[in-house]
Length: 470
Image 1 (cartoon, rainbow, N blue to C red):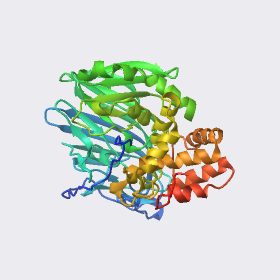
Image 2: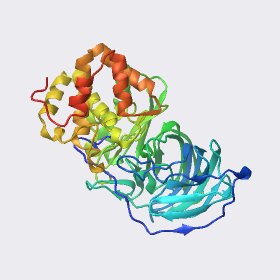
Image 3: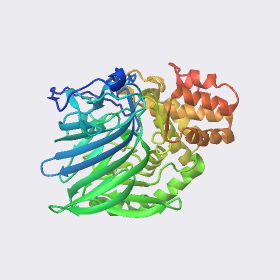
Image 4: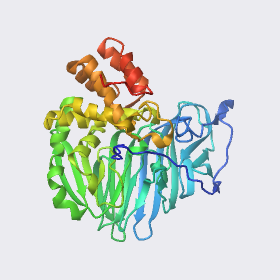
């Protein structure tokens, strides 16, 4: 994210203890041919959030049909999830916090559904063979409750006076739709939003339709065709002034802003195409078919976030530096997504270094100066950027600032020409995929043609601050 959720920001994830709800809508029969499946794991054993995500399947597409009533805060949803079994499955889990499940089916047949905390376990009528593609449909409803993080920030579905905003890093998306909520399982999305016609409803990607439905309500459909981690999915429903345009030749750009902020944000919003072009020239082709930004009034959200194709900013965070940071995440974090939450410095260190490079290129502030300032800040030496001690440290200062210091040291070691080749190549090699810290260090050494242990040992993994910045 950007934390922005931004400079030292400490994140996260709480797991909310919920009452157990058991819903039985069908039974289970042995698989034809005598194959006996086993339940998929209830988590992917992420180093920080072991219960987040689920094993046994890989999602390719989410189709979410959501109806929201701002007066009551009620959300009625249907999630249609297309996935492929990665093992013989007798049952599998979806992450879902709160909300009431009314019905669940697998390939159209009723499935038994059991709730325990944030886990929804489905048992299909017919077991699934490894390699089978299947479709899960879950009907659910309720008033979503946001998650409160250890640092006091909130994520998930956030109700406002006349609408809602949904953000999800790292686990808040499970408060508004069931899914495989770990960054290692990316998928395409289609998100339909039904809300009062007086409000604007936005999400990721390209708007494909908007049509009135009964009761002075409008159903708006957004499509995110490129793979997206669920923590980057977003919904914005409220009173917004929207502006449309293009960037990079033919990429549609949608910006939306609280009406009270239209004039104050106009000049910076108009810079978005130029900022994207600047980053394309440095990092390679823009990875998505849409772009934009949303600016909300302060008070609803306490940080900026790189939600895919449409980053969101509270008014107090909408400045050029933060916008550069969030746009850089479209390459580093959104397209090249961390394999696990331990790899989060690949998001935040890269986006922070994008700030340094922008200041060097356009404001006559050498990246070396930013590096030296970061070196002098004791907060950046609390832990190595590649090894945060706990979930609450994932968005701490070392992940951002010392993560950027790692990249500067690589740049100094290999020279500008090779370093720029490395950044463009990294974004190309793992475009729309997942990558780990080990993937990056191996790739950097391949491009450099030599080992870079002196950088990794001190700046990426080292516990102690060197005597001097070198």
